[in-house]
View 1 (cartoon, rainbow, N blue to C red):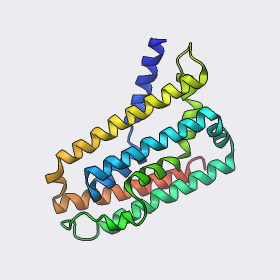
View 2: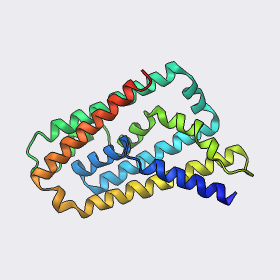
View 3: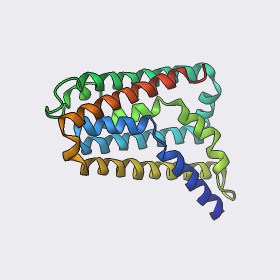
View 4: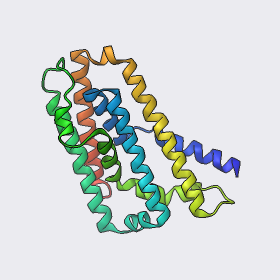
Length: 206
């Protein structure tokens, strides 16, 4: 059982560190509002994983993953949200990069915790991941519900550690990141990345 759990931890760790929409959303928050708001965004993402995990344990995530219409609806909503965040990033970073971080534009849409939560909940690939891969990683000797719960908590902890460490790394690089040229480049890159992830999500499976 311990060997299987260690193998599952390694697989989840690899999946966690692969760059994706969560990393882009956190980077966006860190650039716009600083490390505190970025960490709140990470907390929202972790909450989203717990929600998906609860749905997977209850069997509801499998229903979504198996329903083409429901999957498509969530996928398009998630894609639209990522494109919206990316377009907002590009619009804000066309302004003077030396200006103080702009909280108001993004706060009008949602707080940092809610931004992370919504971006994660509107990613139907988490449902597929939790209903497809997670059961295969479940250690034997435990009831399925307990094994799934353990893996979801493990994945959430790894995500908190990875994204939290990433935010702390960005905060240490604060003086460099706040240089106007660097802020403009990072803002544009993050905006384009978010839009790219949104378009990939919208066209996945087409």
